[in-house]
Image: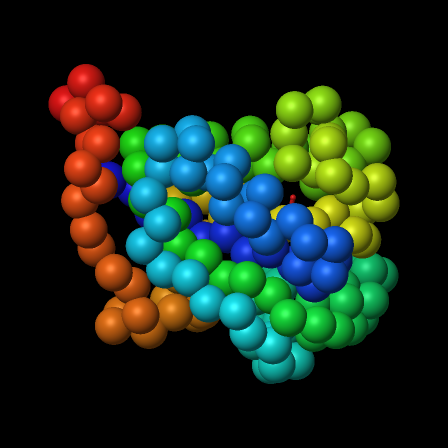
Length: 150
Ligand code: UDP
């Protein structure tokens, strides 16, 4: 089973979208294995978005992600890395399809409500950056055989 890292950004928390966003992934059939509400330090923000450090939007992005509480999560399931990205939608919400989280709940690229890992390598890196092993809770949902053909 694959795991990915998702984070509801400060705009998503402020706008009361935490329940809606979690529900979306639950209803898809994915399994929540890690969850915490936290303030992001500048150090964590700069590490997380390290690949963008030379981009013009980087300072604003770090200010934004550290500006209020974030909900950090690890989700598990078949194909969850690529499929969570599909459920999230395009980086710029103006290009995100209706039905995706960014398509339905966001307008501006700098306020796009949720982060999702974009590759298996980044999923592993981000899970290790944001969570300690003991914070992750492996469990077998009782509905597994109704979601997976096995
Ligand atoms: N971002 C921004 N302005 C831009 C491009 C990106 O503020 O012009 C922010 C936006 O919040 C985005 C994040 O930087 O989600 C990371 O960008 P990336 O290209 O990795 O997009 P993502 O993987 O989040 O879709």
